[in-house]
Length: 638
Image (cartoon, rainbow, N blue to C red; front, side):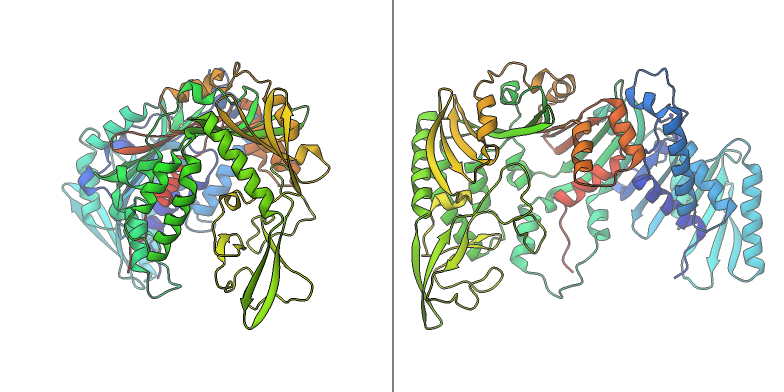
């Protein structure tokens, strides 16, 4: 079906915003693009772009300083020209390219009450009368050739054109407002009327609230998606004719899909760097969903005390594993098999989780090019945890020597659990990768002892022998029992108790390289999982000069996030280059030049899940909005 050039341009502009880099940086103020937003009750999709101004090298904002560098400006100019050509709607169409260029420069917006009812507005220049004349001339030329039909209409006293094509039942409408300063495009008359009406009124209440809530000093983009628009627009799974009602219910109820009201996101600049904020607004009852259970307790400064200030990557969070298991077990839509498996896991795991606290962190530090890191989990009862850890290690040692008998298909085969090497940090090129390319398969392997044959179907991906329990990632446990030590997925070559400084650790040896041998121990009130070489550094860390001293982290912590993600872009770039990735030159230059960390916080308010990010990377808010959509949205059954 042939789509109108003008409407395609409007939609293509949104696509260019979503994928261009950097988007609207540095931004200029164009209040008109948010004024014409629909009222909340009519909200489907809304996206506004403020436009751009030349970067000021004297700005206090580090991102703008980098954008003002001649090399970066030249690179971005090339990209903008490339995107304009790509999304202008027609190759070598000078008119379409000029409109797209003005949209990027001056600002634009697009919204739709439904996916089939879309309208938009693009800000033009003062001297754009000649451009409008060219658009009219091109339109009349196409009409004379019989490609389209054109008729003049009026909305109020404002003249517009109605364009119909021979190959499509779709009509579209367009015209100019404000003495030729604004180009308006719509799939119907109602869209034109809405823009005309809203252009004469203040921002809708939801836009004003979003601006106040996000408080971005220099707003670049503002987007919003209603729950109905998201569900109607999400692609349906064509691979199956039927969906499992129980699974569908589980996804919608427990994963939170039925509780999403709308997603609102914004991006821009603050006094230091780039800012991206997204809010997933939820309906009453969402606190009983997975997001509500997991994002319900704020991190405190003491929860970051285990992370050294020189961390190059760090994640910290508040997660009560016992509460999480209880919530999953009560979730609507669980199949009987899932309920039984969760009940078994809860029965075995709950006693071992009882001594765990609800704060945890994982971090990596790098000194002299050598990386090391640890997983640290707080403890409610260190003495109890010490006893439980000993019990787990004894079970693990016992499992290393286990031989089991199974009978299947008329065969009596002796099976043995074989320990496999596991590395917490680093790669092992000799290890085979699984079919999903998810890296080496750690944990349990099954080997048939001499004189026996493995039963058909007892291989990963097939039917497992009677009495065996699937452990995930192609692993099975034989004998029909659930051993909590198996949940670790660790079967080292040997296990021994050692001391590092004054702390007791269990050494899970996986080879001669000490840096790859895992140690698990209790240091103070924390359970620590790390490598033997790094443990020697960690036990001497007193908690001073921790990550909370970082200004960017301290700023994010004022929002009381439940989860915090921190990374040094230089380390990320270096890591990617080490693995041979071809990195984007412009993105890399900005990441390295701003010297700003990436800090993301996830937290909840009474009616929303918030994702806030501050960094030296000016990425569009639509990317985080998409994260919210796929994290909390659920596909509507046909």
